[in-house]
Image 1: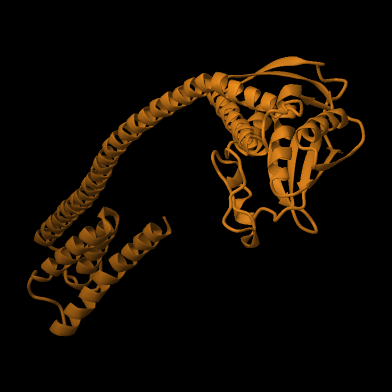
Image 2: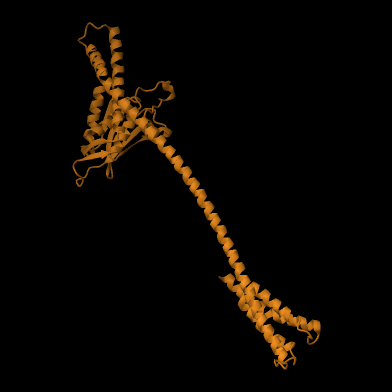
Length: 397
């Protein structure tokens, strides 16, 4: 806008200066009154140029000022605005008409040129927009093709995963009966009253029993993971005494592993959880800790509107880089280098099951380094308050 105003001011300045400059130039060259009317073409040329450059308004100013200057300096009697001859009046009128016509034509040409430039610029912008939309359309088609390919891949992988889970569940279910028989019979033969079993056979039976139990646990973990990955988990959320839950998990662990030293600390408080799922989490965490340490400390504490269950050991600890991936399925970590290349027995599913169950109860689980060495696994679930319903059915996908 400011640029346009400056151009208009310049146009009117030029329209005032141009006729004066032409007049001064003619007078300087002729050194007196002009005998011919050829000077009029100079004024008409100035009118044309001003009209082309600045428009009709400045051109009219040039035409009017040129008429006045011609009358004063070149039409007898010189030096006055009086016109003595009718022929001069006619010529002057013709000049005025010609000047206006030239100005109008030049201004029309100027407007047409501006319109043509605007039209060309509009066409250029339209071509750019059309090219942009063409490229967007091509990109859209490419993305649609890629999305269809990815969707097909995801669908195929989902179907493969479903079939794998179904196969694992079926195979695991079929294995439970013979494994139960193997573990049961080997346990019966290991009873002290079986005096007809020699020491060598007892060692073989003990190996069979130990590995059978390990395989049975693996089958149980596979079945549990298959259940969790089936898409629907039925939970019964209700107030659970946190201290009693730890005591119950500790008692069961002591019964299975008498050599394990377990301590339980924490005050009584209520957590909103599914008791069976919470016991499953604690069982897996204690079993995981017992592979690295003979001393396991259990504790519970309130943290705002949540209850934290902690299972801490004095083992080699979990490297910081593994503290997230350790909850992936089938993840197993090695012990410290001085323990050799042996991997602790386990299915690699226990911590993955813990995370699934914790998330199903709207909680979470993570691992931290324990001061002084070892690891601390923390499970956080909602704290039960009086305003909360005593129990509800929860269905998570």
